[in-house]
Image 1 (cartoon, rainbow, N blue to C red):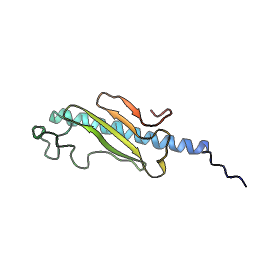
Image 2 (image 1 turned 45 degrees about the horizontal axis):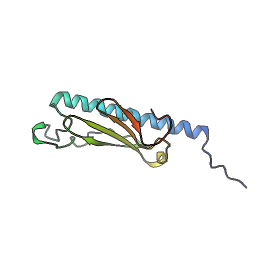
Image 3 (image 1 turned 180 degrees about the vertical axis):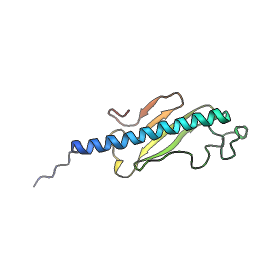
Image 4 (image 1 turned 30 degrees about the horizontal axis):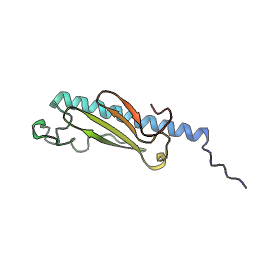
Length: 116
C-alpha cells in the first residue's frame, strides 16, 4: 500500500490563508510602530515611553500574534525596525519560512515561493 505524502491543493490553500494572517499581523505591527514613532519620536521607547533612555525596546505586550505565527522585532532601534513572523505549530515547514517587514515597507521571507 502506497502512502501519498504530497500535500494536497487544500493543504496549500490552508497554509496560504494562514500565511495571509501572518502577513496581516506584520503590517498591523508596523502600523503600530509608526504610530509609536509619531507619538514618541522613536521606535523603541520602552514601557516608560521615553526615547531619551537609549534602546529600551518595545513596550511589553506590543506585538500582535496569530495562531500560526510568532511576531518579533528582529531589529529595533530609535530610527529603524525589522519585524519577523515565524511559523509555529502546524504552519512550521511552510515553504516561505519566516516572513519579514521593515520600516521602509520592504517585505521578505527566508524561504521560497510567492510569499507576499
